[in-house]
Length: 452
Image (cartoon, rainbow, N blue to C red; front, side, top):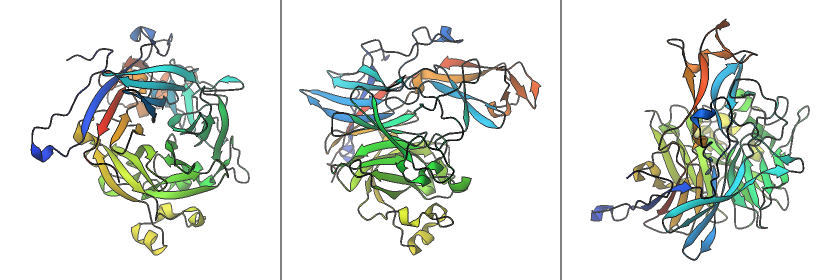
């Protein structure tokens, strides 16, 4: 059946008693009854006559039941962007709509439909923010150059955020997390920024926001905080997407990524290690967190994903136990960072990583999207999962030089391409993603047994 703008609901048919304990899935394609889309009038607008689809689902929050309806809050990331050739020795991204402001939205699931409404752009006292990278020289800069759709350099204003997660603040607003800083951002229900926290600057460093451990500045570029949740006791837990790359040397060998606790009432922080599935990946830096959600003050659910040794995508939901995990701050000293330790050395130093157990393998349930980036807890048997559709856009190489890849090209000051400093007729274009990548999916998963 062809999927139109309405949602498609698929129930998992289990004909064998041996499969009776399998989770059940309701599958929705999120629609936008208000006609919400991202306006685009740039060089490749003819390929997007309706504009760009909104890339909701970078984070997900269950907000309650209204009769037979389920309601959620969600957040977009920094906006439509695509891979592009480097500028000099720096990497770059094409920002299709540079003035895009990350959006809060609501999702309502009812009568076989999942509908997204009430888009609210993130803003501060100066107006809407944007998603452009931070400029060099401040903690949180990714050292990537922002380019327009015609490959001209764009200048940010250090108000850019790449939001990736959403949690309640207990006061009617939200806590969001970001990949740049990485930042924790408190916003009200309308999306106005009330407070920001980021890695505290050390001597000689410049930061946009402080209050979090300085070591977080070593997050891999664009792999800062990817998930966030609020514990029942009010603490905020944020997950660093991948292993830290301390001094540019630890990302491949680090056996864990960090879960950061922040108490908004006191400012107190703590950090715990989540063990990635090292045996599954060619290198530990291939592991990525998708999102997290609290079960109680000591347990949470977490999406771990990434490409395995056989180039197959994996998307798994784990239950994580923090009750016996070691607080890592005391071990964070130059030359002694636990990211450089193997399993035996961690044990010798008395460092315990969080315990984990598998809850759901999304691939086994039929998940086809590359990324699962939103995770919400409805009750002790029901979960919700969303993907990020990257605003339905990707970059394509036009008139390529035979045998060359995107990384072989360089962008000039005039927006043209070269190889080995020699001009080439190659250009970079933009085109829509195909299904299913272009769809915004929301899954409601009913587990066979309650979470304990």
